[in-house]
Length: 291
Ligand SMILES: C[S@@+](CC[C@H](N)C(=O)[O-])C[C@H]1O[C@@H](n2cnc3c(N)ncnc32)[C@H](O)[C@@H]1O
Image 1 (cartoon, rainbow, N blue to C red):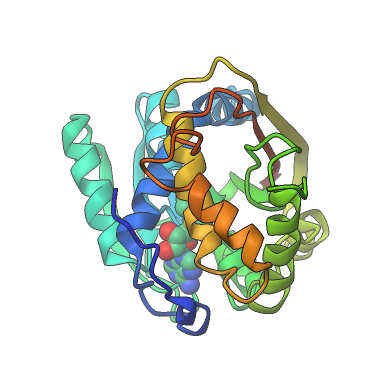
Image 2 (image 1 turned 180 degrees about the horizontal axis):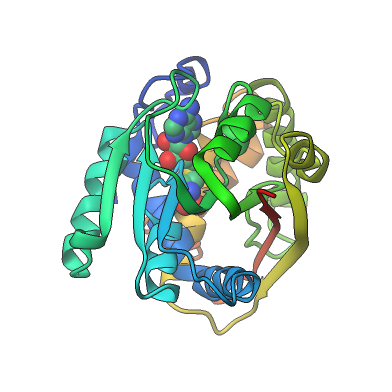
């Protein structure tokens, strides 16, 4: 995995431009999809239940990243095609490579576009999927209105949003001062409040205001306990590395040293080797219909 441990704090300031560490981001998104695959399967199964008579054929995955949603949807809806839209050319390349590896390239189209700019001209679709992406938009309410126009009447929108990053560590980690991960999360939340003001928003009313009828709001509390698959350690490492790159001025020197140790490839008690990781993730699905 790419080591992006060096500081690149300036990616807070390049909104609308490809992030400098997209290869690390690609690895993180792939690990998220791998470790949380039952969650993705549960969400697509909810969407199948909401479209019993007419399974979606044309699907739009907005802010697709490396295609966690795209591939879960292609698997769930065997006749479907997905248009994956993202502003990052590197993540789009990665998604296309994965589509080829999985033999589904004929069912995927990628469109590179910045959704803060002119909305891409696309044919009307049956389902729009936006996972952990709406909160990135400068004006999510405008985004939701554009999504409304992208859907056929009767079509479904699935917004999946996160409240924060996943947690992995036992509470007693933190060199004489337990609670390191909680302190990381508090510092991250502060940084995000400034740079991602829409994260953690109550999306239901905003989705309704764009013209949709809410069909379901379902919180998922994902709680994966040991023994966990080997990818879990890499997922924890990638998540904490990403967090580390934002936390330089926000944690004590002791906490930063502990964090550096935890994310070190070779540390015997680093997250790659620990057997006490416990994955906790909170996500919410809002499913809404264009009347
Ligand atoms: C947290 S990732 C989620 C990726 C994917 N949906 C998933 O669930 O794994 C957010 C994605 O939104 C994309 N994104 C952020 N702002 C965007 C914008 N203005 N236009 C298009 N894509 C954007 C990022 O490049 C990134 O791939």
